[in-house]
Picture (tube, rainbow, N blue to C red):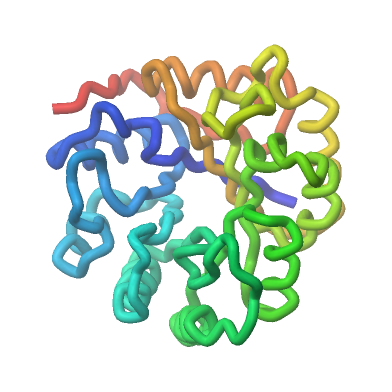
Length: 265
């Protein structure tokens, strides 16, 4: 098993602006990380994945591992096709949630015609689509329904489910997991705290999850997804916990003589 690491643009949410995207990518690249893109930035309604932005996305993420969080504004089938085409251009996987995939949270899984169209177009385009953890039973039904659908295990969500334990998620989903969202919380709300909280997800559960993933020979992309103090501080703290304390494999390496400081325009 190989784990590759990305950082969600969530960490820039309070600081990013329309001109800062290239700096954010350069900052992450210089630290050895890929990027998980959010579909928009705070204060802007325009989706990053619109065709008019493709050249900028391509240039800014050149030579980077890229993951795309799908649009979350109830995207139409045409908007789904556009973001799948964007993912193909960037050689990126797409991570989506149940509602954006056409499965309302409170409904049962029935015909799934809308979802089937997404899966079929993604397959034709050779783009991988992963469902981010929602209702465990519903997610398991979906992967039975769609052979090509992958899973993104949100570790924070798994820690707050009152019906299933963290280890239930690890046991039942590890075989199909190709993406992880690395975050932490105190068990009451999925508030995207840095990994390694005292009183957060236990060390035993972190170790258990890694053990489950190691049972399967595949690549996994793990995205650090949290609300930080400052990006540099957040990454340092997260890395100290994940790689120095937990000894997770594949630690990203900074560029030689790294001195880049993230300072948005």
